[in-house]
Length: 242
Image 1 (spheres, rainbow, N blue to C red):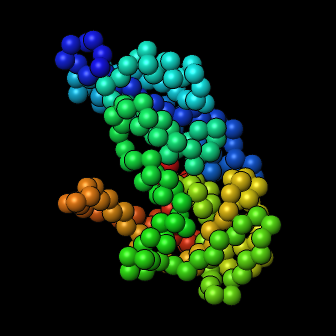
Image 2 (cartoon, rainbow, N blue to C red; image 1 turned 60 degrees about the horizontal axis):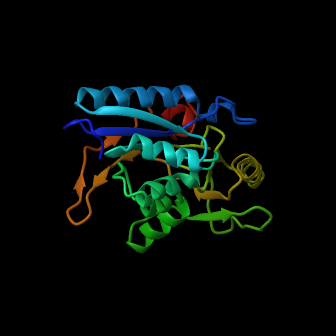
């Protein structure tokens, strides 16, 4: 697509983040410094691989952004954009834009991104496939919910986030009052429903699978909780992950 001989041009696209702390819970803040490190590492690795590299940060998508992408004319987009307009659910729309522009893009398809971001949908799919998942209830703003079919302790998460966003040491609670307080926090700060699940103690494994017709399981990683403070629930909070 570009005119640089045999060197392929890769455009790294990322979302521009704010360093402003999340209200009432600064440990959940995702900073621009985190993003800069990731972008720098990706750029260096691609250059070492012989690619020409450009970068483009997104705050929004408009005619100027589209014109800039057309001007750069990349062979492929290395997609590091995980939100837009401060909404994680727009991650799939950014990938959809690249799809409409017919530019090859790293990562999952827009549909896969949209499904994976919704914890409730993912668990419904897993349950339909015969895999055990913890019992849960979705707490929607200004709608009643019941814990009658759940057993505590409970873990409360934003339903449409990933990367442990919205999860901290305050996310695991025992009483109905604590559940309601955490649900209110998620409604106010993340503007989305809260997923209330039975907390399942035990080992935590990371298993990546690539491919469709012939899926391949990559190396399995396990979270080491041995240095967690005594008495704290073993969870991977945003602070611990990042």
